[in-house]
Length: 287
Image 1 (cartoon, rainbow, N blue to C red):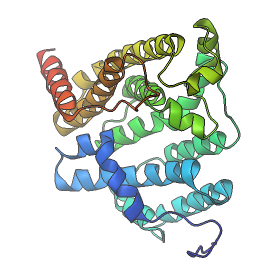
Image 2: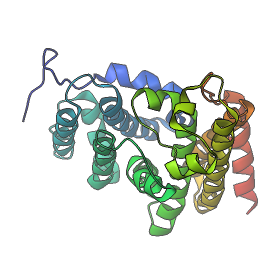
Image 3: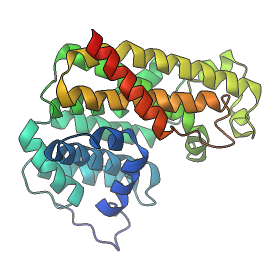
């Protein structure tokens, strides 16, 4: 095993840098309501997904080498021999819920793809990316609640892809600073939007129309995945409702901005998340 030190050109970020970000993401919304052990296991999954994304997006070192190191640590976590705190924390969740290693590997592959792919020509190309970058998270959550079935996988994939697309809409400027565009190029062309238009503040009408189109598409995916809630019970339903609610609240924020995601990144309001969570749980209970 390669041992990395703080002086190494490729150093994995510490857990203390990763976990504070949970407060800004759907993981914290779902975890807040859960029993202590379940919450700990959910946050363990979050820590690893955050570690992978942090390296893939922000590391100043050799990102490919770091992602390889994470995969080695992942192997050790499944053998109860991990050294990185995030992977050590994951080991208990792996033992308790038999979390498939392949789902974490798909997240790693998404970040490896980010190092070489900067544009997505078609919506289908973007969906293929989301199958690596987003959908494994929903499947891991189902395993956490011992609720993983093929039918639920399909519904969870719809929710997670919708969440990912909304996030791409929120983070257009941030992604462009990294040299990436996650909005399908065919959609830019449809609305007469050039890549340079994505740098204009405030957003020009073609960008606003493009963002409105993508958010509506993402909402459709969230709604298509809502039957997942009816198939779940107890804390599993509460957690998944929190994820779906976070997506709708984020979409609300984008709509409030009038599609101008460039002047300021629109973020979901806590009261909107809670309102959507309550509405989704009420709807699921009636069916």
